[in-house]
Image (cartoon, rainbow, N blue to C red; front, side, top):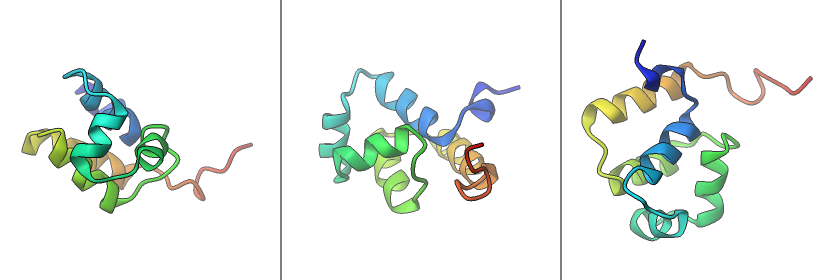
Length: 85
């Protein structure tokens, strides 16, 4: 199994950010997305195409990496589908 398939969307974006050594502030600057928003994304607090797409572009992810991320995002339960117990 591909490790990307078992990671939550935020984990995938966070791993892609950390891999080249980018800080969240640097990614925020490159992507044009707020630091708090990216932090929420990496902690799986939000799933929003308008955040993921600029982050992926700024990280220069390959088409395969993007597809894995968005496939994971589409198959993940939304916060309302998976409420805390």
